[in-house]
Length: 414
Ligand SMILES: [Zn+2]
Image (tube, rainbow, N blue to C red):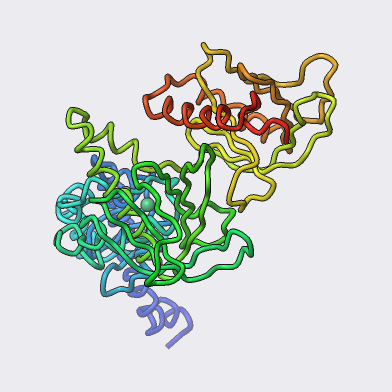
């Protein structure tokens, strides 16, 4: 055989190469097709947001459940194990036909009907900015424990009674100690005991307290900050539990008890109106510098927390009591916030002025951006009309002034 005939005959390796090419091409074509099919499915109503938290443009899908999810929720799905949820990236992973078919059959809307059939109204459904533990527990409640298919599994937090130990931060020593907490919706109380069989150390009214889930300053994901008014001032307590399901159940139990009591007190109100009254996250917290009542006073570093219409300031982020509390009324009643300081007062970098009928506060932020954000959140509050609950808070703070016999109700001497 001459050289020409050798080259013109397909040799074994050429044959293999040719077949491999065909196989590789078909495989790519299928992958291409499945990726396109997924992209089409993603456009369907309900599929274009994460099935669990509502974040836009989900990039992952669970192919056994049949839903599209965002990156954060995909991570939580994966952590539950493949026996609960099998997730893949829509573009970076290879998809089998059967997996794509499963997603076509189910989709976010149908899955919601099944897995969220009986979500109790007090449950805080996550949005993209919800604390991580709440999102995690929502997903586990939905698919792992199937709490919303089997309502009897919600008894922990909807029954109106809960008791158990939580680690509570000591007011004086800042260390955490186990304390027994008892929640009783019928009495409207949340009590905690230092010694189990003795009288409670404190009795809080559920209807009057606020609970915020894991503010970043606590540095523990499974923590709650519970705030309530006592003797005309606010008191904060900090608790955590090492099990994120347990701490979430406490949070939900407080929300459920609050909702049930509000439903009795305001039978005419819509559920949506009442739900907005249950718990508040802090719109903003952080260090600001403030002067004393005289504008020539030095600026001092304080930890500020905006909670509804209360702007509180503390020496330390984890203090049990604020040093002062400023009630933010409506702009038509003389409340205003503006950049800079009045003429003659010292401007410390990123200063701004908070005007109240009682006093003018000179504050200074850490950066231009920090100042803008503080001014924006305060502006939003003073533009909002007052609710009866707001007026109640104002009255309780003002009672403190009358009781102490001074005009400086908001601790303005400090
Ligand atoms: Zn999500």
